[in-house]
Length: 507
Image 1 (cartoon, rainbow, N blue to C red):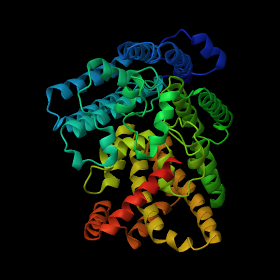
Image 2 (cartoon, helix red, strand yellow):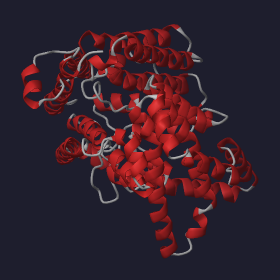
Image 3 (cartoon, rainbow, N blue to C red):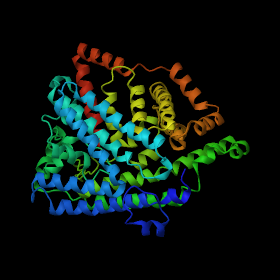
Image 4 (cartoon, one colour):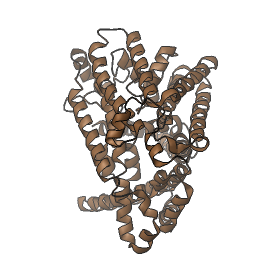
């Protein structure tokens, strides 16, 4: 095992910024990452202004985006960046050589296996402590893109139109991408280091200068003429997101060492601290781990917006929205009143990927299957699996409470407020309890933490899920379809409710 001094400076990428690393006392790989993202931000403005679709061809935009992306990857990860090309090339060969009927399954297995092999090798074969930069991080995003693309090609070229959901119809791909388009989608400079994942159709529409062309639904018709007349500027949104990201970085660097997560399993702390104080410390220690994710994902979103990517139409006030590929909503995370609301606003594009690839397509136990896939995708540490297995029972319990208990508190504003306050506190503690193994990584420390809590939330959630069972999703959908087929008025009501829900989500 390398000593701490070696661990803080070793890096697989370029050593050009070693003086900056020594001056700031930050690991070189982290310095490389931040500098590359700042260079990507500057490049994104240049890309939007000088390589605008009105000034150059999609071919040039694809080439430049890909070359810049591979350069940044090599600067950060050295020759480990070749894995990005190998994984992408291998799965593209599968797409070309196998039929569209089954290639989505092959691509899912091969891409996920390749990612898992790299993660296992990095953790258990090589000395993980040597490098704090993880080249498998970008591979996780590329795996999402590869599998999303494969399923969207399958939907567009192998499935009948009537068998697709409304969302699948929008994202379905009707022709096989060229090799350049494929590598540009996977390895472009805007998203190669930190994502986020986006749909292939959205990316190609951006490259060709027709944002949202395939998403223009009935509700957007009024904005079509406006979109053709003027192209909204992302500058204000980019400044806001960059400022937010660096504020989050400052918060993280200021408080992350004040509330170390490891103290939750310290024997003296457990023995001498009242349980209510342990609960408060757990919340604070996990709260201070989140700003680093806020920094990385918000900055990544700003980079895409600076290039002109991420436009999502106009809101009800006519203001442009730049949240098409946003990965989080900070306020909704911190004030979430249910497990589902927290997950829906945290790592949004990964949640959408899991939903499209697994949850919507798995006929039985989709919740459990989705959590297991998420654990496999995240990596080889046992703590990840403990977190996601715990997440299954917490999700089932939260769903039971929402279905069975929440309706009783909706009769007055005071009761609703009381319910929201209680569920906010419960949600925050449940989230913290669930993700402790995700931070601690190992089985021993994770089980030590759960034992100190007597596995209380596990037991409580299992009891709630058993006492207040909710019918599986596929059974609820069958009943809903049966009711709609028997009563045409119900079908109209369901359509109206779906439209209202869509408007509510996008407002």
